[in-house]
Image 1 (tube, one colour):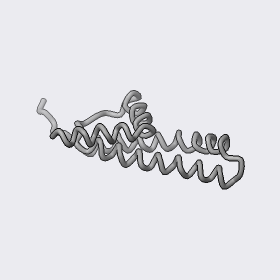
Image 2 (cartoon, rainbow, N blue to C red):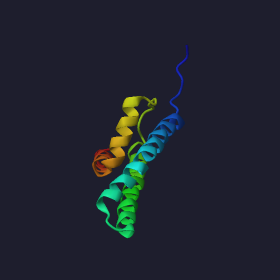
Image 3 (cartoon, rainbow, N blue to C red):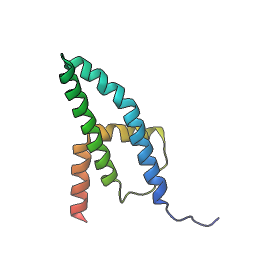
Length: 103
């Protein structure tokens, strides 16, 4: 059986699946958190918008951090890692930049 070349598209699809699932879970979560911390409608919108901006920045940092990574398959553990990484994206981005400076 011949070895197949690495497919970067499958890695990107796996990461994009993780990001999509993270948003699917996080949007209701951010709406709930916004309702807890906001007394008025404007405060809830600000909390909700801030958290969604945080998720968008996390998604971009995950895509940046995985740009040179090896191929992965979508598994439950990888999707959980994507979810946690998107919420904790400053740590992931700092590690990716540090790894890039070493190379």
